[in-house]
Amino acid sequence: MATDLKILLIDDESDFVETTCKRLIRRGYSAKTALTCADGLTIIASGWPEVVVLDVMLPDRDGVDCLREIKEKWPTLPVILLTGHACMQTGMHGLEYGASDYCLKPIDLETLVEKIAIAHRESQKPGI
Image (cartoon, rainbow, N blue to C red; front, side):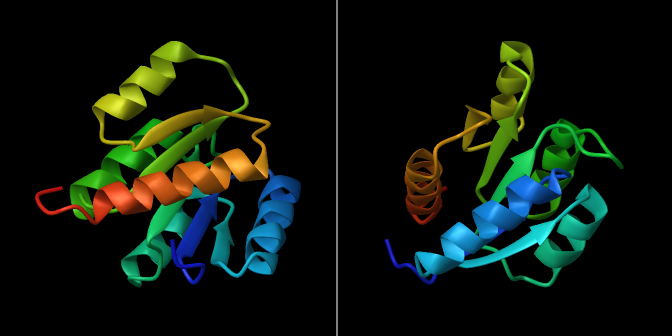
């Protein structure tokens, strides 16, 4: 995977997104953050990200609702859901609405990078 991949982190935990963003940038990725669904949608509308990492608990909107809007407007954009709350039902709903994967926080950076790579690669396949 090319390390110039553009990753958007949408999560209201500022420490998590800042730390994860810095770690991704140090690895050669391009990364931006948004603390709300609305801010994330603005960045996505600019055409910037190639992969979105989305928390399911946001202050302005439920993350699954945010996912649904992303997939309605940008159906081929890969989205990985993250949550600090172990709820299998939320994960299943996310997958039903088009999430590429579902992960629990805290997540190891290596695992997240691997899931981002898989989601991006899968989105590049013809017919997806």
